[in-house]
Length: 342
Image 1: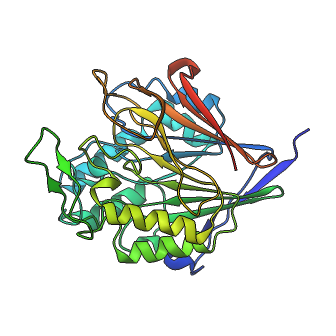
Image 2: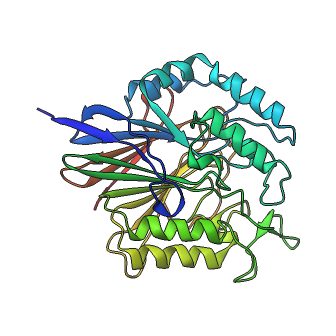
């Protein structure tokens, strides 16, 4: 018989300082924790997955970005779209039983492929935090960027969710004028994806984590880097910096959860100095997918690309330290899954 898993959600400000805390306790089976996530969602398109997500009974629903498609400097319009999403029946039902956290990407940020140059980013951040129901007096309201960390403790182990912001600080991308690709990697050392403040915070979170599993939520892909769209690979020096941080920190069970691409896939790489492979689980296309996908290179891919509407499930076993990762389509169909021991 499963025991009870008491989850303590600790809201901590940047650099890990416990300036203000809010704790929420939830009782769930403690042997296996299920977390669901997904991205690329339009409120005015039918989402056939909300009932399947709810049926999975996840501890959390994590938005991986593009919650809405605003693409506007008018934050009133952004707020109206968030309000419309909150009225979607299936999502309303999920929220009644499941905690919602997450990050944004370009379309809910407000500018397609946008970064630090977006003129309404401060106002858009407050609209996003309102949608995420972050208290008005919470320290997250006064920092720049929506990055944050959530800590969960139970009798059998600990889980940390690290939510990154790949928009607020991201500097200019390099257009690829020589091929049909949209972008190419910046000159090594040029520009930033996370910004130095967020990098310092991330370093502190990984160097001081006590969690058995550390899930890092990035709105864009970390490993797949040859498709020519947005990805960490456009900032190769920051890819190397993150890999080195993982190796130096010795953080356990780091898994990247990404979105953006309107496809779902698994990528994996071995990093020198890291005792386990790094997996990047991309789940994208809640309401619309890259249905005419015909292929693209990804040397790190495991299995095939799923180009249908889907969401992701992460099942963490706190006894065996095994993780089961599933891509899930409508009616609970699982076209692809992988397992990894940590």
